[in-house]
Image 1 (tube, one colour):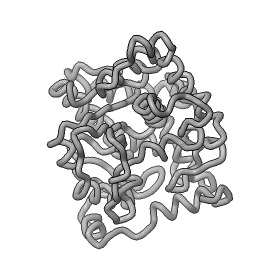
Image 2 (spheres, rainbow, N blue to C red):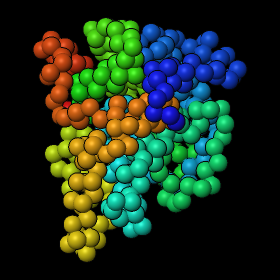
Image 3 (cartoon, rainbow, N blue to C red):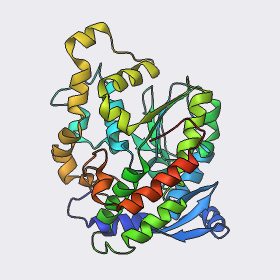
Length: 329
């Protein structure tokens, strides 16, 4: 895709492209809300724009999970880009060591670990996945209950990453403003925050999304590894080793001696990825600039954007929604 293409027009085109008649018929029956980026429709208990919803329907109907597959499942803007980079480097470390020819140097993580509903199945076509080598690595923002049946029925692994909802909201706000650079005030910060607190956000409500995966991780820890962004930032070595063990690709004693863990973490660090040429100049398939995926990535950045009252409001929602679950932020 040409780097001279307008990122606003290309992403708008992505959202507004025609959907199938099946999807149109479904949309006419669904509740809808106007939010930061577009109209969201409520389907199977979560909110989704029309164009991605067509991809949701397609992947639910056609994706056939294999027992060796690994799905990275996340709430939007919770560290997905970092997780994709870490997992790609971890899984491919034998035949793609950290060198100047590493795939992540020439490709954004989202182009190497592709979304089911937002990428592979979004164009009304069933993709040919024959070229994907095992273990196949995919990603999705779908809630647990809405994953394709084959995912539930197979022995594939799920890695889930979530983040403090206060930081998630701020990151989502900045991301959508970047996409709407020519009309950033299409909805006010306060209105967007109000919608978020109501649970009206892409693939939200955030509490249902998080609790769905949290509860499944308690029921089936062999299938689903539940991670929190703040814990990963605090103890990245520990959690990289946990990821390796979970996907049955453990770090060997020799690799520990050779410093493989620190090598992967350094290479996939926020600053290193952000400063790669591809992430300064390139765009992913939907037309979004790669640079839009790298803002700050800091824990607690919400304090620079939310008022004390806003922070308290979200804290109360979090406390209420997660009460008795054993999960906290």
